[in-house]
Length: 341
Image 1 (cartoon, rainbow, N blue to C red):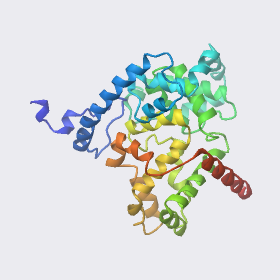
Image 2: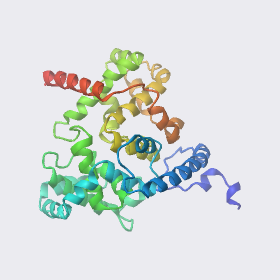
Image 3: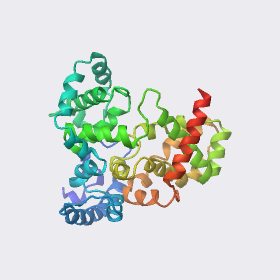
Image 4: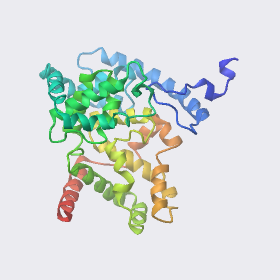
């Protein structure tokens, strides 16, 4: 049979480039249409990036690099660019041999090892590269990075959610040590206190999102209040997993491109875009379970599959979102949470 005349389902691999199996109900026809258009964009971007990456000062912080990153880092440059813009490359070069020494120490910590092992089989069950039958199986790499990090950052140790984040870092870098230093950049610098035992940063940012929705999408905020739904029920997984397992992998990687360069405010832009774009749909909710269901639904479908268009929207739909506004809201929410404890 001519492949071009075969149904889209037969032309598109059942497992994507990162090892994830396509979910049931996957819209192969829409995806093929999107990807054929996106491939043209990727090819054009790859040529521009290759030209830029030939310069020794390629990824210094400037408006051109910011613009390029917002339009997406090609796969072949993603690991290198994430390492440089996050500061992970600098840390790795300053600390030669450090990763292997903390890994050796961590392996002696039975409590830490047990906590990590418990979650290994739960990490990406829909990804063929993390299965025990895979060769090589990425579970061992994941185990090593998480144990080393738990030893390195004893305040955090191992916390649920870190396995998914580390899994993505391993898929992108294909390198244990680089994944470790990127994890350190995320948890230590980019995400404010998300994975500490009290998870205060995570709690604060969920409340900050609620405040931003009040300002920018007041009708949705009023609905949430009316049905007495806590933001943590709706969006905690969005934040703790940085949209992994929530949005399609291509979209997650595009979000992370910006997260490593611009910091955690990107997470608010993504959340606000999802809510604002689906405002009318959310407002149809009649009760508490309805609201929860609608928040699950808005993370699926054509909007989030078309990653290039979605990324354009996150920088326009929510409007301005300054660092000073977020810092101010974080301070207010922190004070409120402290009074509640």
